[in-house]
Image (cartoon, helix red, strand yellow):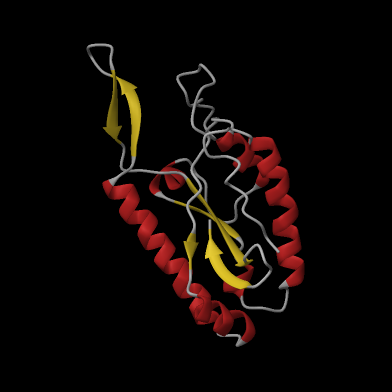
Length: 171
């Protein structure tokens, strides 16, 4: 029942529609799975060194998420060199095998959801360490890629695919 939410964000910057959709779907998820494990209820959380440095921790708050998508950091810093141009985000999907989804949601084995989240966090940590970069003006005035070693990541745990079949995955 929770649909892809961040696909609208990548490259388009349609943050407001995404935030509204996320807010509605998070509430629906919590209501529907109130009796399932804490792992399944952990529908969202901040991750990455950038999130930690910015003071973003725990569940993703809608206002914080909206601000990040709009390029505004919690300390007031605006991304995009103040020109309002920045990339709102990328949608990455970390999908568990179908059998894991069946065993987790139908069989009730919450350890599988915890393992899926742990694997996703480990992957994000590797990406952050090895691939995270930004664009900055170099001494010669040209734009160049600079490794940052940190990312601000909002993870959203979903339970079904577009056909409403059990499908544990994280955006």
